[in-house]
Image (cartoon, rainbow, N blue to C red; front, side, top):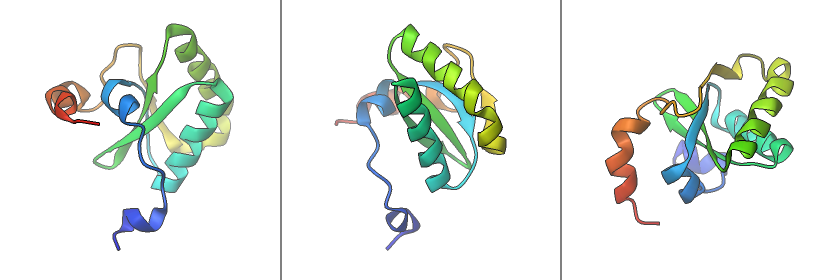
Length: 111
C-alpha cells in the first residue's frame, strides 16, 4: 500500500486537472490541502481541485469569471485560518508551476 492509498483521498476531477487554471500555490500534507480546497470550493460554490507539483500543491479552478471572483473572496476570508498553507496567490492567466510545459502531456491524457 502506498502513502497515497493510506490517505483515502478522492480521485481528482479530470476536467479540472486538464482545463483548470491555477489560483494559488499551497503547502501542507495532502489531507490538509484536500480539506482547504474542498472548503474553499464549497464556500465559493466553485469547481476546484488541486495538483501536487513537487512539494507544492496548486489549487486549480474551472469556471467563469464570477466563479473565480468568489474563490478569491473566500480565500481572502479564510486567509487567517489557513495560515501558512497558502504560499502564493496567482493572478488570472498565471499558469502556475509547470502547467504551461505540461500542456501537451495534459492534452494527451484520456479521461
